[in-house]
Length: 151
Image (tube, rainbow, N blue to C red; front, top):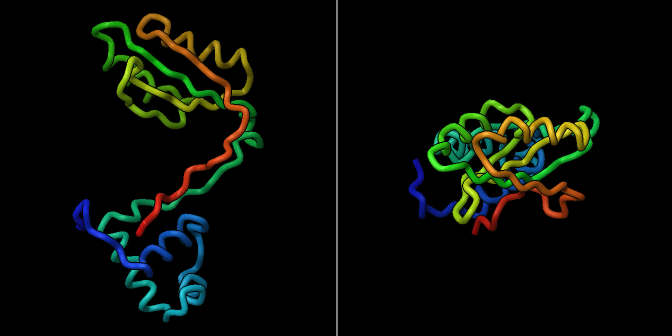
C-alpha cells in the first residue's frame, strides 16, 4: 500500500484524471488516450486499485431527474451526550447523501437531497430531540467534487 506521503508519477496522475472524469472508460480507450499498450495500462490501473488509490467506480446521477430538485447543507450541533445518536441518525437518513464530521461549533455538515421545502422540514424533524440544526438551500454548485492537484 502507498504511504501517505508517496507521490504518484505523471502517468498515474493522467490515469486518475481520466478515470475521475469517465470511470467506465474501456481499458483500450484509456490506453489509446495515454499512448500506452492496453496491458501496460491495465497493469497500472490494477496497481492503483490494489494500492487503494482507486477505491471504487461510481455513476454520477441527476438527482433532479430522480425527483430531488432541492439540495441543502445542514449543520448539526448535537445536544450534550447525543453525538453518537446524531451520527447514527444521519447514517440512517436516506436523504443524507453525504456528511462530514467537522471541527467548530457544529459537529456535522450534511448534504441532503430534497423533494420540496416541506420535505426539508420532515427530515429536520427527526433531529429535533437530539440536535440543533441550521440549514441552507444550495442554489448551484460552481465547483463539483474534483481531484486535488496530484503532483
